[in-house]
Image (cartoon, rainbow, N blue to C red; front, top):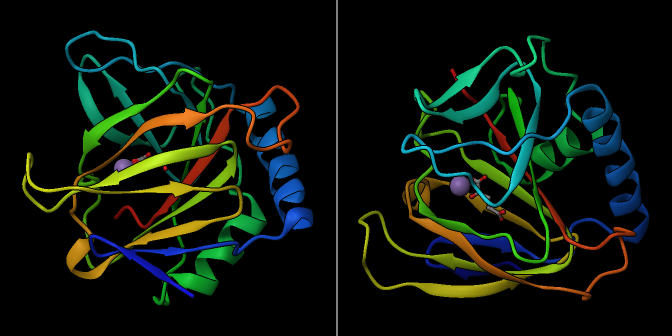
Length: 199
Ligand SMILES: O=C(O)CCC(=O)C(=O)O
Ligand SMILES: [Mn+2]
């Protein structure tokens, strides 16, 4: 059963417990090669999530703004995309192109993400596919204009959200986690993977 939240399609439980553990293992391999960092906004504010990327492109935010880059801030190319994440994309994206970027966000118990649009990609006909692992997170979805009506849903470990079609440019964010709701990550928190076609 797919849940429609303001046009974003949430597929509950796409990954079973074994697949979630396998994907965490694949994420750990990425993080060993391309360590998590805490990005700054254009205004010099530290974000509360830590992030890294895999695939051809990684998403970067710093004083120069938001953009995709071929390299981690330490100068290396991004590691290969987790195979299981790409498989999830193939199951749910509905498009024939493969993703070129897998952004990995790590939320500790206090992290959140403000309302924003994903609009640094060249082709908005390509969806964004978002995979949740670890603690539950309150996901808020608005419309294509900032400040409109919003709806919220608790995303659980193994859930996958597809932001596509008319909802591709909808504002969205994470208000908070519910710490201790999952035992997938030994130190708690949440990993979110977002897969995108960039160029
Ligand atoms: O953590 C999430 O579920 C959303 C992440 C997100 O919107 C993003 O990285 O652009
Ligand atoms: Mn986003």
